[in-house]
Image (cartoon, rainbow over all chains, first blue to last red; front, top):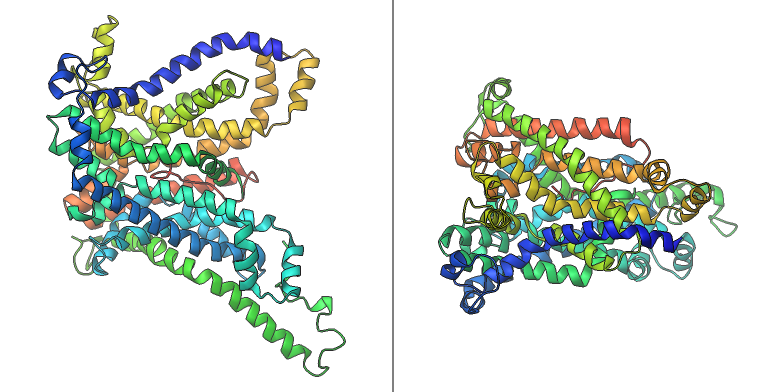
Length: 276
Length: 331
């Protein structure tokens, strides 16, 4: 069978190489263009830089404003992740291990949150944040991001918590653990892979969020990377090579994180999309 | 679903050493304590979700019945005027049309393409891991980065796309891309496919890998050719995954914002505008908050009706209402 399969893969291979090229070219193009001067870029749009120009990348990496954006994005992503995972873990624990009146209705309410487009709530949310004085404040992004991340995080964690056998719970109870002791000392340590998965999802989602920071941060001191990218393009629209360098540097953290946490990310997405 | 924290009177936990006179009140107290613990654990999540998700949505519904600039409380009640205005707004009707078009294009082109790639990568191809990484990588990039990158690549004349077409002698095919009213939506769809097909491919790959190998082997023994095996075994077994992917794709098209806003902001001449972009324009640029709220409400209603109908008629028991929207998470 494997022989027959291998025979069929030649046309398939050609397709894969072609699609792979289409996927890779924009990324490589950006990377190489960042090493050209804008003048060079217009004379020699494709092909290797000659000479290689390091100033574009160097200038951005040497500027405080870029690192401030990285810092802001990191702070907001970490804050969002900690909040959403902590709050969701408590709720998922309750959904998975307790029987109580109204449980199913409550769970349905959270799952319905998955189909609320963020854009629907954006306007009143902005007004609410304004009246709470949370505009130009990182909490103004962290809190709503955590709130909108709850449905998926709760669903995934509930699934994992349910898989942990009831005998363990009985054993812990016999050893004198209350519900919270069991949660803290047994459930959370055992669910570490699941916590990793939802954390990676929350981090990536927060890192890439554009809409909410766009609404909340009018003051550039709090801008995040996606906002910075858009603003940088507007500011340096004549200096394309520099914009490319900025784009590549903005891609690096997400891609690096993806290559490290690939398993968690993909596992989380497929679990979130297919498990009840 | 068993829980040892559930007080169960039948199990005789009160036991022989329980105080004979007290079992009723004791059990009742334990039940109350149990309920309080269960609900107490929910409180932080409920508070966050209620205040920052449900409340804004309800408020949008309320505000949509007013003419309101967004300051103070809405007071100029206009009934359903905002909604009847929507139905006569050519831009909004265009939004609906474009949304439908993107849905149809995604279902007819993007998802089958993703499926084909998943089937290819489900075989023992050399470099499979690299292709998986590469196809999925754009999904991890933010919409802002993707948008800026492709707005440069598709710049008329000087962009990479036009250079490449010229170099291979197809210069005539180059053109306006995002700048042309007739080409902007197709170009946008190309970028969306570049960015999102890998996500759907990953879903399909996960589904394919969960399929039992025995069925395919049995079909080979029975002499089924590859197409027959795909059509009569793989496809039906993959149906639950396909239905989820279709659902996510449609919901994503309804709420499309980031990519459009970064690349075209809806232009040229509204030809790439989506409902979310129109809402943003009215709500945050022109301060017609009541009218913008009405747009939000229509978006919400469309998502809700679609989701409920889909759940009722298509998903049925595939899942218990669990679906992701990894845009920002998932457009």
